[in-house]
Image (cartoon, rainbow, N blue to C red):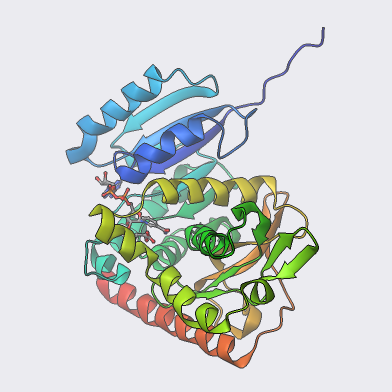
Length: 336
Ligand code: NAD
Ligand code: LMR
């Protein structure tokens, strides 16, 4: 028979790996959910000293799970060792918000981590390393990481808004009682915060009689323009209220979706939302990490161009951009 040639392993860094998202994410990566069922992986797990015993426990469980794709696990509190030769970096490290806080309330604790880890990544990661920042405030942490790692191409530094995107798909599918896989092309614009704009104006749903716009299918603009938007904007807070902990399984799943689609491509005719370095598309101020609709091919994302934007949308897109401009200033003052 033919000799089966195994692919070279891809090394994935997970920071904050002893935390709740880390615990959900590591086995997903080791099962091929992030990079594909034929892609061997090596996991680098980083956390800080107080969590080092717990991190060891996670490594023990990963060994015990006997994942065929998992070719190695490095569990460490040494950021240089963690960053060495990584191809993909998923940044969960930081402190989550508690009930009653906004995501930017964790700013001063978290941005300094991103400044410090930027240089380690820049110096030790593999060439063309792709970075996904999950820890909040996600967009601004990603921006700080970008600014303190000038040799990493700006296109390689992104933040997670795929969770918000998936939440929007989930709410539409629940409302219409259709499979979530039949809904596509929602958009999350802007910040991963309560100012984000979940936009359904270009979204479609597959029905027996072909594709239909979500607006036509839902047939309730009042719900779409008000309740739907605030459900998505407040979903993170609702999870914290219900679980007394922030979202973890859905965040881990969205992180896999984000990296998977970025590296392996988006299906034809479908876009996803990613927080990316803004080039001025749609009149949004360049130099922010802002969530846009993107398509991906050959490991590169591209902002979907030419979508029609009405006045209401424009205002909401500007509003969330404004918050990111303020966060950027706040982050800089925290770092000084
Ligand atoms: P958690 O507190 O359970 O875990 C975070 C881990 O990070 C802890 O183990 C902590 O020790 C570690 N850590 C702290 N400082 C570190 C450092 N300097 N280097 C490495 N590790 C460090 O939190 P969690 O629930 O796993 O959430 C992680 C982050 O993700 C939070 O900031 C949370 O708000 C954010 N989050 C973002 C999204 C999103 O959609 N963007 C979704 C859910 C959660
Ligand atoms: C989420 O959206 O669930 C996370 O960002 C956690 C949070 O603080 O809302």
